[in-house]
Amino acid sequence: MRMKYLLLIASFLHSQYVFSQDLETQNRIDSLIRIIDNSTNLNDTILAKAYLQLSEELYVSDPDTVIYLCEKVTLITTSGLSSNPSEKVKRSLLISKAGALNNIGAIYFNEGDIVNALEYFHQSLKVEEQIGNKDGIGTSLNNLGYIYLQHGDDEQALKYFNQALDLRIEINYKEGIASTLNNIGLVYYGQDDITKTLEYFKKSLLIEEEIGNQQGLASGYANMAALYKKQGNVEKAIQQYKKALSISEELNNRRHQTLVLHNIGIIFYNEDNLVRAKEYALKSMELAKDSGYPKNISDASSLLSKIYEKQGKGNKALEMYKVFITMRDSLNNTAAQNAIIEQKLQYEFDKKEALAAVEFEKEIAITTAEKNKQTVIIWGVSIGLILIITFAVIIWNRLRITNSQKQVIQNKNKENELLLGEIHHRVKNNLQVISSLLSLQERNITDETAKAAILDGKERVQSMGLIHKMLYQQNNFSGINMSEYIEKLISGLLDSFGKSSDDFELNYNIKDINLDVDTAIPLGLIINELVVNALKHAYAKTNEPRVNINLQEVNNQLVLQVEDNGTGEVNDVQSSESFGMKLVNSLSRQLSGTIDLEQRDGLRFKIAINDYKLIA
Image 1 (tube, helix red, strand yellow):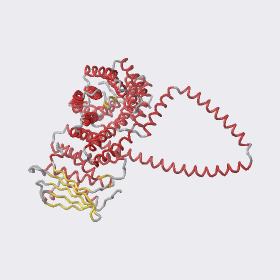
Image 2: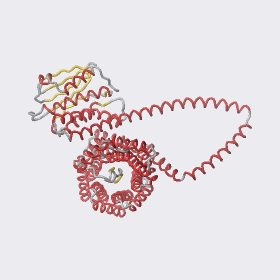
Image 3: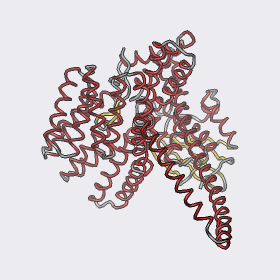
Image 4: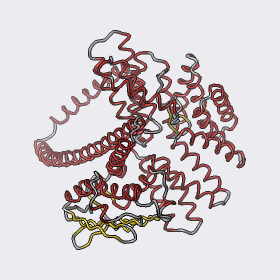
């Protein structure tokens, strides 16, 4: 199986593989995990390739694992290269390293982190050029071109795209040719050159149809739809968007689904069909928030703000507009723009390093001559002026020291914030990896008791992982908003049991409470256990199931109530020896809490917590 790298194309990221969670894909994932499990018997080249291929297989279904897996590749290849291997082994290790750097860059781009995306793409390109790997060079050039396209630098984007296209034609890499043709079409689309846009889009689609690349076809249909929309042919545009949406749903590519749903919503909005526009915009927002894509959240919130404004819903319009502004600013910040300029200049500098060194020496010579001239003038100044200058230097020096100390403190605070954010990001990634591995293990178990235990464990891991994900995404590393957290937690639990919010009456009474991590994690696990227990055992004979969750501070105590309307009995729970109830009791004691169990329409758990910390 030939290894590919993640590629930027047509407003979304994807690997050259088709990432549907079908049997063939799962078999490849299982095979790669078996290879990694047997790592003690493998050489570095095979192990690095296995980790890299696994990162690409899991890109769509589990993107949080990609950086972790690719960092493993860089560690393995760095270690292997340090042992002075043969040229053949060295080339193989460098190819894997370049692929891992490229894939990390693709994930950072997906998260809106342009600074890191550019850094890793350029690192990947340098390695590919070092070994003359035309396939990999084409991928890196294509990805760099796409970033410049996104930031409005058409000239630089076309330069990279055309270089990538020439290489891919040279090695007859049809899938790469199709993707680059598509991206060149996007440049001309932005310039309103309909003739050239249509020419490149059609060339790309013909190749995608020839090789049967479903993800490429989804991209092509979406781009053709955008072209029809620009020409005013609404009917054909919606038809093409729905073809693209169908393929993306089949492939479980959520990012592309959000884009297509958003564009369909825009069409209905322009047609003043606000009901349909809102339907598609909400679906786009839900998928974008669930996947954590800033660009897609920005697009969806902007459209929803306009829809609510037309409907006369001012508060909701303002709420969505605030989300749009936040996401827009995070994507178009000065650091990202400066990073593009800096990386562009750095790459050109590397190409002309010898010439730059000569010019630099000339500048030093001129500067030295100027300094000598100034020295002669200074010595001719009177004694009084020297005293004034000396006094001024003393004052300036003290100000400089003070400002320097202040800057050190500010830099240290920023550094600590970045490190803390990275810690939460890595913890979230590691918990996601554990959850994924539990899912893989569960598929191979036939014993129902063991299978249920693994599923319970997976839910507990996801409960903790959700907290770290919220801390990282919101850049608030001290506290968790419990209202948002509990609603997301319950939604995830219903989804894992094949249910939706439409099947249950969900009642939340949660005050505006922000808790520290040490309180939020055990509290989240308690809620997880109580709700999972209700979903498993309480509703077998209940026609209209209900869950009530109440969390508020009362008399210097944090009071949690979880209530169902099922058929459970107090005596059954109190006499239960299950691990779940033992865990609830243990976590309650950890928080210095007391449990009160009461029979109402169903069971009501009331836990009064004394040891907790609110975050302002």
